Length: 221
Image (cartoon, rainbow, N blue to C red):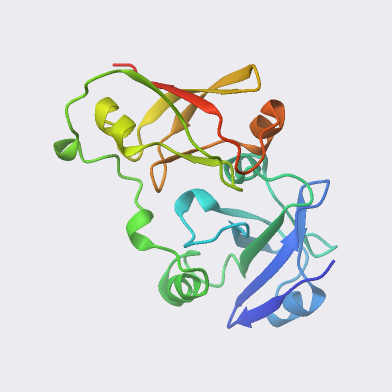
């Protein structure tokens, strides 16, 4: 496995692939440089690499785990689900001993992580949509077709968002139809006014980047 390595103070910044048993590997040199050893609790920021623009909240996950004797760190199921991660996928990660700083995004680490991965602070808020800016809803459902990106993202057209009064952070019931098959899933309206299909969902429908499936959105309440 090839690792691209960069160490900043107590932080190891690397690229690696997710193994079949859901671990990422840290090079021995990085472990030594960051002054970690097997059994240490570590904080990890795991970041997708198949991105063209800035890293957004949905594209990264922060978690804590234990460094194993083999210099591996386990990736929990909830983290894999958030990032739509499967064995063989390539990720960047930041790893730091848990006791090195009060928090993974505190102090000097926050600045360096933002510099390295262009983390957009304005997109990192967990606040919901500003209801004062929401337009009046004209319909509770709408249909459209749009191309799917490499990452499984489909942009909801402006006219659909306006008619349905949709804003970032809203949840919709999305029915995706392609080649006579369809699936229905709850989806969030994410950054860039997109919904995202997981890899398993894309495979279920045999969707490839550039395909333009039929999409039906519905909201309730």
